[in-house]
Image (cartoon, rainbow over all chains, first blue to last red; front, side, top):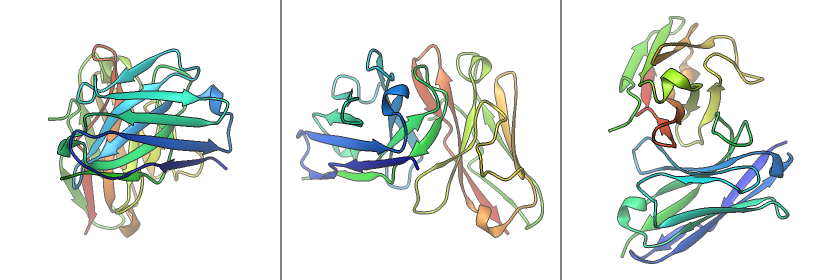
Length: 121
Length: 110
């Protein structure tokens, strides 16, 4: 069965960095686009980033552009979210999600359980 | 302010039908597939509808989706107390080159 397991969350001070990982299993990882989606406390879903199946194309939300980056290692079935210059507004549960397709986003077919990121001094 | 507009809340009695709307523009809903997600309290979202009106395996046919122009709709019939959740619509925005979500709709089954 498809499994997505996020890790790397925690409490971090404003301005610091954090790297999230999402380990995938149960499917051919290299054949699917992957996303990060976040949800602030009491808020709705906010899409963060997508990476094409082969890593050739990446898109980021305006709210994180220039601070966050997405990458993947198809040999290790893992997708990453590097988060720099964190601010309290980045406090959220971060979900990893698998797309139904390889590139231009279609829908989030599978989701991880999420990892909590708290930015606070 | 979300790019896609959903009503903040809807409610209906058990056994009844509810409709959740999702309004966008030509750059998102008008030219891309819409998907719908259910988020039960304290859990990760789950895909309910993809490609406007298709259900993943295991999703009951009480859930149905449709799209017309720049709006989409999620219908839930035969409401059950277990359907109480937040529902989100989402799609790709070709102008922004981002995924956009609606603000979410909280369903209460009275």
